[in-house]
Length: 305
Ligand code: GDP
Ligand code: ZN
View 1 (tube, helix red, strand yellow):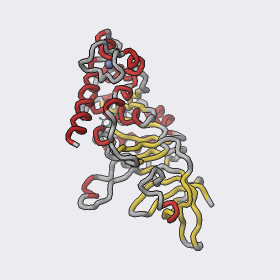
View 2: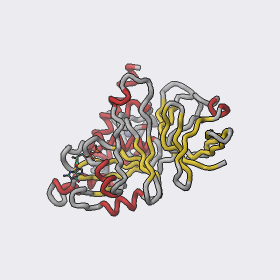
View 3: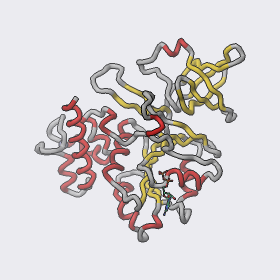
View 4: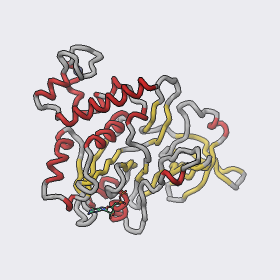
């Protein structure tokens, strides 16, 4: 029996990696398979035990306890949780200072998904050499103020790359963000020769097939993994409850107990702690705007079924 980590799964075959770096292909053992549909379903990032079968192949015989899960919830069903990935230590959201121009509302969507899954998030602002000194810091400073670590990087000048390498070492990081911001370039500059491509599984690869494009773990030379998690950004499809949304804006949390109504949605209700905090400048108007737009999306989605 050996311990291994699940890197990816394709058509019932799971690629798992042993502690010494050896990669094997393994199938789920029947006994575990019966739990399908319930919470115990194998996911990328899982730590597992594998056993030899007839000296020829490998089978996954146990899933070890998870440190975290990134899960989509299907509203209204008891077992409606699909685990997208397990054991992510941190979500790293990458944006560019320019080209493409950063889109704060989209950033907020990524941060909400991380918060909803209780996974810490970190922000990387790449391509900083394209904007004036301090411009990126001014634009993203609000995120630092509310408690998110923000890193300013440039693949061109190598600014911030050493620090980012230290952040990735020894842990499982889910790297995400819009395409074209430099995710692959960052990884390839930090780990030359590794040829990592984040988000390389393009939709076209899977068009016409009924498999969902899954997450994939890339082992890093100095320990740890970078996980590629396609499709992270559509908050609505994660089945979030509208009533839980406000707490996913982490700086709203201290004010949530100050609303007159326990089920306050912080829109038009009187004596709302969140809106008071916005008026007093303790919550930024932009983040509040993100919140109300996202809430609208979630409520609209529910109404449409
Ligand atoms: P991904 O889709 O997020 O993986 O983005 P890529 O790594 O493919 O990068 C998209 C484009 O941005 C490529 O043309 C890169 O050469 C370019 N790029 C990446 N990092 C930087 C940077 O720090 N500065 C500038 N100016 N361009 C960059
Ligand atoms: Zn309120």
